[in-house]
Each structure stands twice: as C-alpha cells, then as structure tokens.
Image 1 (cartoon, rainbow, N blue to C red):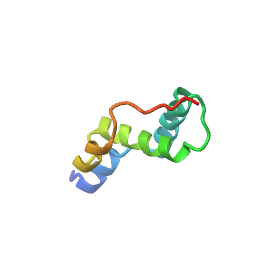
Image 2 (image 1 turned 90 degrees about the vertical axis):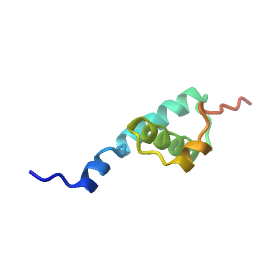
Image 3 (image 1 turned 60 degrees about the horizontal axis):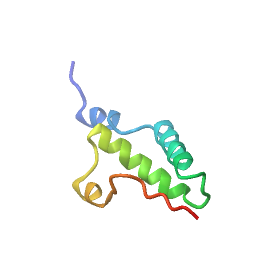
Image 4 (image 1 turned 135 degrees about the vertical axis):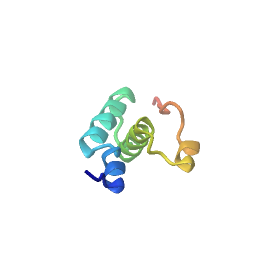
Length: 72
C-alpha cells in the first residue's frame, strides 16, 4: 500500500474544530474580550500547528510563547 505524502502532511494540520476549541479557550483565558476573535483564532491555529510539528520557522519566530492578555 502506497501512502500519499501530501495526504499524510494534511492529516497533521489541525482541524477547524480543534482550532475553534483552542481559540475559545484562549478567549476565556483572556477574559472574554470582544474584538480579539481573529487574533485568538490565528494564535490557536499556530499553537496547534506547533504541537503537530507543522509550523514554519518564520511563524515560530513571530509567535509569542504565551498569549498576551491585556486587562482593561
């Protein structure tokens, strides 16, 4: 049985549901602030990509180690 390399790499990509769940957890941890939905989603996607070993070097350099939570 031959394994398609592209399919194998895609299976390491986090699913939309996984990203949504992680973004929701980030939103809760950030005090349920509105206006940060996109930031939370992008951060969640990158966190999960790093976990799965799919992040690029460029995005790894620009991703903070912990989410920045601004309190108002």
